Length: 304
Image 1 (cartoon, rainbow, N blue to C red):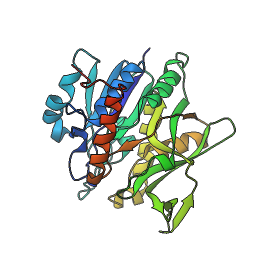
Image 2 (image 1 turned 135 degrees about the vertical axis):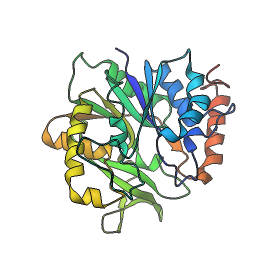
Image 3 (image 1 turned 45 degrees about the vertical axis):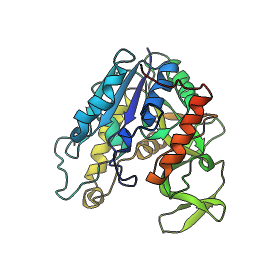
Image 4 (image 1 turned 90 degrees about the vertical axis):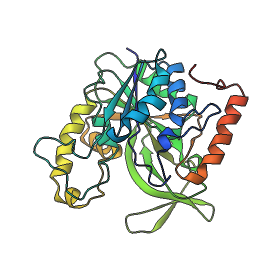
């Protein structure tokens, strides 16, 4: 069975200043996720699923979904603040989405095969999709708890225009993930890659430290685990009173690793990330994409 690509496209785009999911950066108005989808199809993926917000569904269908007709089956799922388990209500003043793993949960009714989760606004490059696609397509039928992530070197994932959020990873001698900690402020300071810790202190790390760029490979029972743990998450008073608390994928993955429920293989890639965390990142991203087109890696127009 061919794996499915799940794209997280519901982000608010607050740092970028607009809906970067719909921003045309390629020579014919292609978005970053157009390139991800093109690379995924080339790498053997058989279906795509978008997680978006209902409020830009119409624009999304016209600008994005229509172009894939005839190329790959595509479905939409919607992330909303009130999409919570029975017995839980969204705090009245909350406006921030519940996080990446809540977004993943929105796809539970349409994804029945091994799947890869990615951000819609990160340019991952094709090798990334080849390695995760190979892992997922080679899983024995009925596999449970054998997951993967693509590990990027943190020094290759920074923005020149501000901090970025990354999951900083540790792995064992078998290349299995041991911990992933979401750090929401990472940047280069005095030549050293550094992150801000819980106490507001900057901690320096090596350039080749593996980080998660939210390229995860799972099998469908991951939804069951996520539903149960999300109830635990919501049952903690601090997660309901803190209007910015988030149910991150790394939070779920750490639990499954610590419980011995799952292993997560850290897959290496030659790909170098780039993206548009900030509006000032846009010109450089347009230039890099055009260079890849000029080199013949991508056609001038992706989906004809």
